[in-house]
Image 1 (spheres, helix red, strand yellow):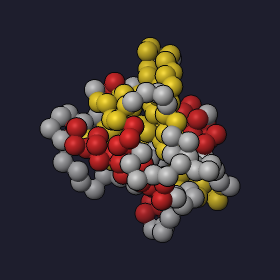
Image 2: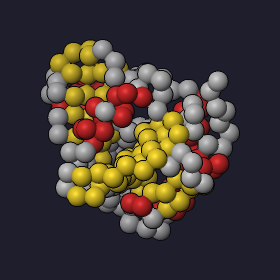
Image 3: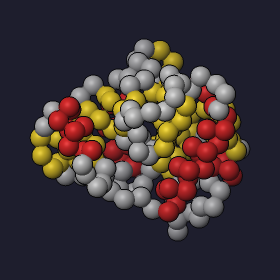
Length: 185
């Protein structure tokens, strides 16, 4: 998360952000400009979102990538990939209120924030049942699954053959998730 730009309410933020060229996250009255993504980061997002979309096509959920907002208790966040609980015809909505699955693709500048602070905010969402962290630099995969109201189970899936997403009953072979991506040196 970057340096806060200015303070405002959630509603004022949503109106303000509609006129901005870049994306911004919002928490407790402060606005944070989001940094640009690398080709490696974007490719993993598209690989995962595409496979999830194919899987969910006829089911009760739908997937969005990068530009959809998720509302948390005191803020607005942009997950890289989000699966919404309520499947409806996609319209003009900009904010998802009930995500089931959130995937963050890590970058060097956001790794710590995504693992700690952002996950703490996402855990406040009662609809969220799974949170995955994908690191395209070293091909690591970490998945947290809700096991109770305030309990989460952690599984390091880095050595597995597939990313297992229990919340949507899907396995994505890791070679497909990282297709077209070069490890960082």
